[in-house]
Amino acid sequence: MKKINTRYIQNAKLNSEKIAALTAYDYPTAKLIDEAGIEMIIVGDSLANVVLGYDDTNKISMNEMLIFTSAVSRAVQRAMIVCDMPFMSYQKSIESAMENIGNAIKSGANAVKIEGSGEYIESVIKRCSEIGIPVVAHIGFTPQSINAIGGHYIQGKTYDATVELLEKAKRLEASGAFAIVLELMPEECAKYITENLSIPTISCGAGHYCDGQVLVSDDVFGKFTGRKPTFARRYGDMQSLITECAKQYISDVKSGDFPSESETFHLEEKELKLLNIH
Image: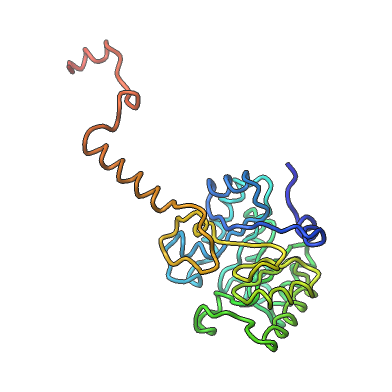
């Protein structure tokens, strides 16, 4: 089974083939979606909310990200694994950024994702490019900047804002990013950006015209009990399945139906006689 790499992702754009990406945070989920044929797995900092129960993504640490990236990497044979660099893991200095990014690669990631734009972010991406670390850029709505943005607001809603986003995207492309996530923007804005870049764009709530799509797996599977984004499609109802299984298990334990004879071990007869148990 051939491992998906940056060339595969870039060729998908050239061949007008859509790229399918999902998040994953644990071994079994990563294994299943990899076997299903997913092309890119992002170990997103969204695990702060959907796995660890934090109220925002900025609370997750680099060490926590590394634990989950390692788990995903042990499960995956084909998909490209992208580690989402968490808040303040790359903003302090180039030196600390490279140490954290290096640890992400050592943990099993094939690439890293970095939010934001500007000269400093570009310099981090350039440094990664120089030493052979693939980077996925991320513009539009950037969750790590939610305190500055003020909420989950759609970005790029005007001509000027769209042009500004394209300029940012082009600078990130020039810095060495091999792909870019466009989050929470009108699809016409994302279409304009996509058509004016050489690198693939991945939509996260940015409409049809990007080169690929990414969603949080817990939203797709209907597992996360929190708010589902408007742009996410639910393909399953794991919430109900897990709840019903738990209720049935509780009922079976209370009634004595679990464990059954086939789920029980016994002593040999001679050992049983020694214990004088009837």
